[in-house]
Image 1: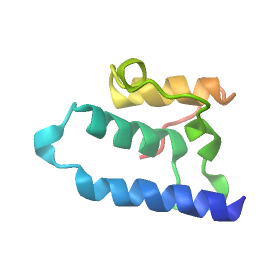
Image 2: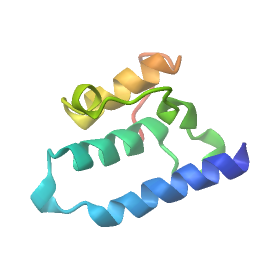
Image 3: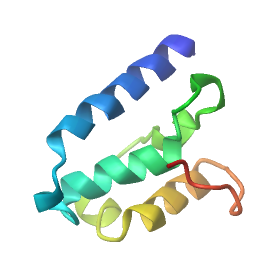
Image 4: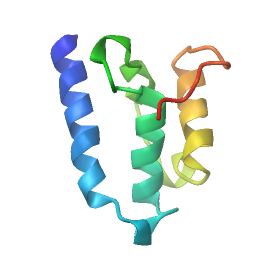
Length: 89
């Protein structure tokens, strides 16, 4: 499980290099920030919520059509996390 968590955190970090202020609100930007908020992989992998980013299917037009915080909350809820959980940032 640790290895899978490490790989997921690494991919989220790599995605950060693709995001710039010019594409704020774009699907790419929404995906990156929603993953970052939902997974909360920093500062420790042990407390990260990688389950929130495990999808059976993914329809970008449906999943990324709102604000990153809203998206992250939806993913956390779907993964079974409580509604009052704080978003990582």
